[in-house]
Length: 178
Image 1: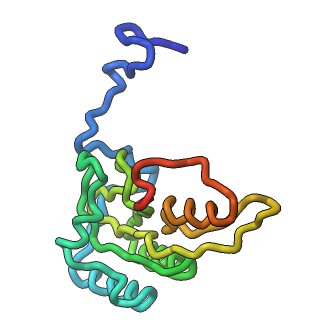
Image 2: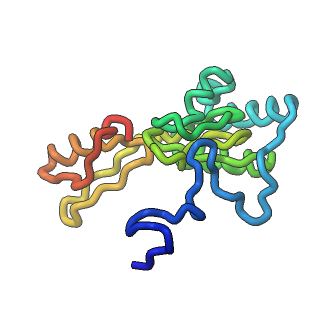
C-alpha cells in the first residue's frame, strides 16, 4: 500500500477528496455537458419514446420524474428530462437510438437502490428505468445458472432459485428493490 504524506492507511488524501454533495464525474471526452432541449424538441422526443414503449411508460410529469432524480441517501440528485420504462431489450434499443438522435444523454437505472449516485441523473438526461425488464429464463440446473432481466429483484431471484434447490450468495437490505 502507498500512503500519501498527511494521510492514514485507508484514508484518501485531502487533495483527492471530493465533496459528495453535488459531485459528479467529469464528462467523457467530447461530451459538452448538460443536455439543453427546448420544449418542442422535448415534446417530439417524448412522443417518439411513447411510440416505442407506450405512452403510459413515459413519465413527463416533473414531480413524478423527480423521484427518479436522487439516490437513496439523498446526497446525489439531478433533474431528469423524463423517465422511460421499456418492457424489453428491443424497446431499450429503440429508446437509446431515439435519445442518441436527439443528442440527449441517457442514465440507466436498475432497482433505484444505489447509494453512490451511479444511476442518478446530473440534470437534463433521460432516465432509462429498467424495472420492467423482469423476464426470467429457464434455470439451467446443470450449469447452476439463470439469465434474468435487469429489473428482476434479488428477492424474486432468491425465491425462484431456492425453490429449485439453488441459492444466490449475494444479499443485502435492499433485496426487494435491487
